[in-house]
Image (cartoon, rainbow over all chains, first blue to last red):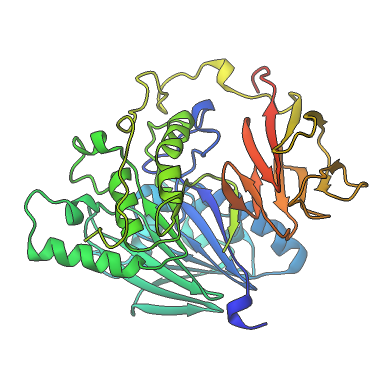
Length: 297
Length: 140
């Protein structure tokens, strides 16, 4: 089968930002923190290891038990709690023979391995990282480009988040998916005082997401909320929509939902913004990412 | 920077802010917010043509949805493939899965391959619209 005809599927396992939010008012869009898997043929990657990775791990463990050990590749956008807290609950890590490869940024003061094993220190968790049964390999990105099976990945640093983060452009099966969470686009596209640097950051982002078949983008705040949360490292929904549409994104999954936002609130936003963008030229399909959904591209 | 094509004009009211009563993770949850996994589930089927609406009670088993008369949930509307989708129960969840249909399966407007269903999800299959509901029950 040629690469251009291989189906690519994207599954959302966790869509919430900051902290997991179980409860009746978050049941529909989900309360687990970020985790997304991308599959193309027999190749797959996992983006972030928030609490959503637990359920993915259960599914994968079941597959491993029936089909044998496999390699799992986890790419971390950054190591804030909401993006790594599910890792100790990822079942394949406890299965002998599994190759677990975790990738993250090299531009931190501490080694990635030290950060990740730190959250499994005995003071925080009963099992230490060195006790995991899987063959764990922790790798810091050395290059902007990486290939895992049939999946090609390009990385770019995002400085508009406290401590920084990484966005990923994933090319597979002739499709382009961009995962760009934890970034404050308002600071680049709508700054109080535009500078050469803010313009550069805006252009860099637009070029990165241009013509994406799917953009998974940070849209944590409403426009009015953002006014009180400047510098917190997240983007307002109206700005994300405008920037994505201008870059000819075909489908936008608004992601990293605020813990205070309810299912009813997202339904209202979807009704407010969705039809206008679906009917625009070019059309852009906007939806609020929800747990348990798989879409084919 | 964002005016290469028709710029979206947001009409209507300003973006709503979450209700003051929205729940935070530290607040006690009202018991009625929880759904009962054993509560009755059903699909209300509507059609854009004048076909008579009908409802189907859903049990924890697998249903094929399609134009085949032997399908568990037969839909004869246009745009529905013979074997269009599958509805099944897994790990306390109701899941709908598209079976490589010609026109796709949509949940709340999003074309999906697979989706865990929630109360009041609207599924679109060809010219048929199916409302998934789970009756409110006790706490779990």
